Image 1 (cartoon, rainbow, N blue to C red):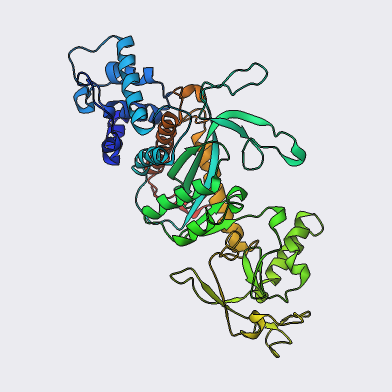
Image 2 (cartoon, rainbow, N blue to C red):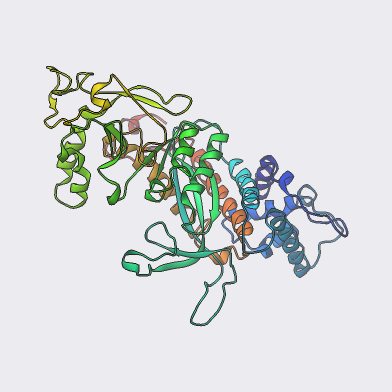
Amino acid sequence: MGALETAMGIIESSGVLSLIRHQRTGRPSTLSAKAVLSALLALAITDRPLHLSEAARLIYAESSPRAELGVTGADPPSFPAACRRVAYRFHQITDALHLPGIEIDPERLGAIEDFVNAILTATVPQGPHSLFGLDATCVPAFSRGPSKRTETKPADPQAGWYVRDGDHRDAPGPGGRRLPRVAWALEATVAVTGDAPVLSVAMAMGIPGHDPGGTGSRMATRLWALGHGGAYIAADRAYSNADPGNYHLVLASMGFKPVMDYRIDALGIQAQCQGANLVEGGWHCPGMPAALVGATADHRKGEIDSQTWQARIAARVPYGLVPIAGPDAQGYRRYGCPAVAGRVQCPLRGASPSASAKVFDPPEIPPPVCTQRSITVAPSVGARHFQEHAFGSPKWAETYAKGRNAVEGMNGYVKDPSHQALAAPARRRVRGIAAQSIFVALLLSAANLRKLASLAEKGETTPRRARRRKEDIADYRPS
């Protein structure tokens, strides 16, 4: 099957044609939206630039199934006329999704995301996934940014400056200094599967560094609608530092479990509830030694080595509160004292001969966690920092690295200049967030198809692990 036939099948199965709403005026069009979108996706699949002139060439000069594409009329037009037809039809599609202008209202943004995610989802095989990676990547615009020196305005006013540091916003850095700008760009937030094959499942476009928590929540909502609720979502510090009501609690409401890192100013004790301390994502006994509480901060400062840090992280385990129940329907969780469970020896709870860990400095006035059989923690308490896996533990490191490597790898995969070349703005020259959202969705879809085709050629459903040993008994197997 050729690239154009494959592209037509994806556009038809995605259902995006039913999402296009525009006012019909004048004579009936001889060029369908299906033809334009299919041609652009075919260009992405065959590693060609997403130029409207190339789409016109593919439709009128290279393609054979013109009737199936929805192209009517007698003889093909001249090439300039064909380019005008394709450009006019493409702008009809983008205008139907987003009215021209700088401001982007949420309703229109939702329409754009519904459209592009329908295309992307059509390239992902159905199946449960237990882990996703979430991250934003720079999408340079085919436009220069504004300049105060020359008093010029950008040709694409819906983009913004992308800086490499922090959360990528064009904002003052430490000491008020201006952070170095990378490009006048948009930002694509992408959710990818954490297990093989790594595929892009959901995406959204926006201004760099603008509301990463809200964008991440929209990604999680789309994953939840696809039936992936309850999975782990690994994301970097831009999301772990988001407003809890805008990100963490939204994820928790759908059963998602965040896996995240912390900034250096968010280490140690992060929240308290009835005497219990939330230490780097997990609820712990208030009598846990200070050396264990500050282990990660000491490691980041270079005061202890990695081996000592890992030993102290492991030593935290007995001091962790014991989960009893939850989260319930309202998100509340119940925890018990680790001394009652026999994990630590505490003077306030009596002897625990089987426990090697000890509480040397119990609170002078015992709080509820030290006197009651259990405490109940509301979902909003410590929501910004809470996570299922103990921070720094081998399980946390494995899950976090897997999710983060998956999304960073996919970002690099789709930016490969010999294939989709997402980082090359000259290959997608139409400006505006609606047009760029469509282009990025088509490039991510093409990258998904390229990965699936590579696996099919090898006769595999999942990638094989790289061989590290010099001998393999399979080398002696008769062919």
